[in-house]
Length: 512
Image 1: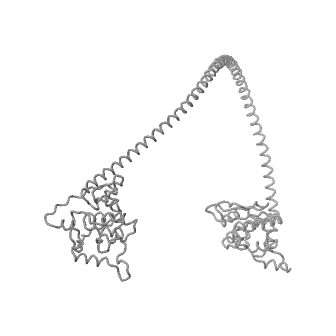
Image 2: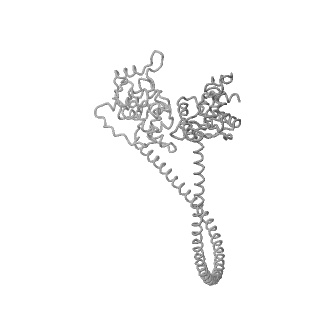
Image 3: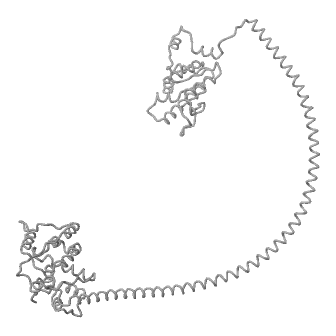
């Protein structure tokens, strides 16, 4: 169909200078591509807010209707109608579809970047700018309308004539009428808006009818469920009534049992009263017997007192005899000491024994070797352990860290205790090993026979415990202390013990 310019009462003339400037701005660069790239939504909003330059195409291109609108005395344009939302969206979609087909000089400056958007983004992001430009620029709207009407075919021709086919989409008719603006276009938009609203109301009514049908279906289902539940409740009521009858029968039986139990209780109460009388008589008899027994006990205690007095006198006689005997023996010992002219001694027999083992005759080679032995010689340790009733005290960690410090503490303790068990079994002497520790360690093996394992308490060291052990021994008993600590050696030497170095015990253990 031949294209004709639609009627518009707001057409205005373009300025040739502005048209040339717009054409220069939209011209492609040397590579044949548009100079501007697709903007972001924020840039587009900023650009829409800028003042729009007046579009002024060549005067020869203006239709007759636009020329008439530019004459003095033209009618004042009416305000824009309020468009339904579907009509507004369709107008923006039609404009966005044909916008890239316009020449660059015919596209308004605010929409030049929108024309470069992707099709799915053009109508969505450029909707505000397109709507504003369609309202403010009648010439742009007529250019868009010419291309939209060319694409719409017979429907566009019918809209230009001011009629709308009965089978046409009211939204499409209203959009074409808004763009073409033929005679009576406001009536077409109003009728299309009424049709859109009627469709919306019909959709709401259909939705309400569907919801009502769904509620009716649910009500029918609930009614069926209620009938089933009522049947279940009737069955349950029958069962409860049956159970109630059984419970009533059981209650009657329990009542009879209660009466029988009460009768038996009365009989038991009578028997209890009889037994209480018998128990009272038995208690009276027992009290009388208790008084008799207490009298006999008093007589026995008196007899025992007399016996104790007699025994005390006899013991006094025995004590006098024993004292006289001891006094006689003591005077005899004093007389014998005077007769033998024995002076008080500074050494005990154990000291003499130790001296005898420590100081041998200097004429033999063995005696010379004994005198040359030091505190780390295992032979010296053997000599001291050979003394009668010797007591070997070992500073545990001092020996283990010197001999096998590469092992863990648990392995060190285990190895030392095992070796001392062998020494105790060979010599029969008393052996005590002392370790530092605030509390007893876990994981210790059982102590061998003759070996005592001690741990120092919290706030006390193993050295203090060793000195306390040495002080507790009676004077004259040979006590051997193995430790390489000089303070420990000096301390035990002052209390009469024999200090030896840790190497002597390590050599003795390695030999065995």
